[in-house]
Amino acid sequence: MAAKEEVLAIPRGDDLLCGILHRPAEPADNGVVIIVGGPQYRVGSHRQFVLLARALADDDYPVLRFDYRGMGDSGGELRGFEDIETDICSAVDTFMESAPSVKKVVLWGLCDAASAALFYAHKDPRISGLVLLNPWVRSESGLARSYLKHYYLKRLISGELWKKVFRGEFQFRASVSSLCKMLFAALGIGNNQMLTDDDNLESVKDTVISGRSLADRMADGLAAFKGQVLFILSGDDLTAREFKDEVSQSRVWRRLMKQSRLSQLDCSQANHTFSRKVWRDKVAKWTIEWLRAC
Image 1 (tube, rainbow, N blue to C red):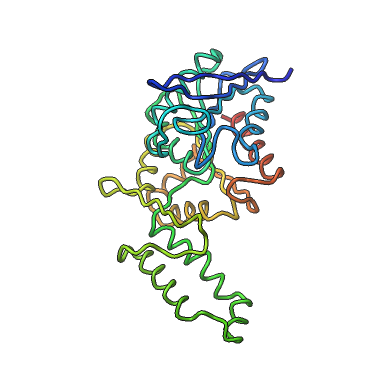
Image 2 (spheres, rainbow, N blue to C red):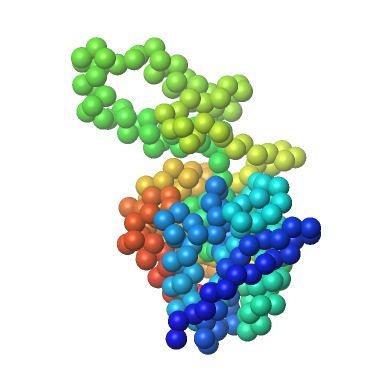
């Protein structure tokens, strides 16, 4: 029997959040709350969250996908991913009240929703696990290091680049200026905004509170959380590369990722939002297999 889908009104202070509950006929005692990440709402890019929720519900897992305040159909002022902990708490409250079979909750998040889940999970004993896709760890210096490693080195061995050089079409002065700015940013020298060819990267989130970077505070949250964690990383995605680079250069992150309660799966061809059906299906399959194992 197909799972029922119903609208949930989630109270959060004076505001109401909009959620969709997927209720299986024979629900498991583990439920999943999908947190929205980036400029998204509860449907997700390419209907990813809808399709994922239906796949999970077909395997008897109750699922809630919701818009936090200021997103989609929810009321309130728009807020950043670091300020939605009370929204997540309200969503979990309403989810468990509306689906009384659920005893423990897994948080599922892509990009900065994964980061938000790490900030929240250890504060709520009802959270038993995390599924984190391409976590957002961006800083100006980290972004610069990733560009130097994954973009500039690739460009250096590109045949097209050397064709431009030999044809006299290479913008030497501009390219050297851009490279110098990138090197300075990677080393943390100066306050100049990096120049990139990608308009989506013009706004760089370099969040540091009391001297601790975003990645450091996410590591704190992961260390404090004692449940099972699944990381799913794309192969064709700068955000995933930044996360991998952070893990490789951080002793704390390397130690955390070696723990047996953590596992990682790589979707080598996928882009950031897993836009192709084969990638979305793989993510759903991996999530279901991990939930069964947990």
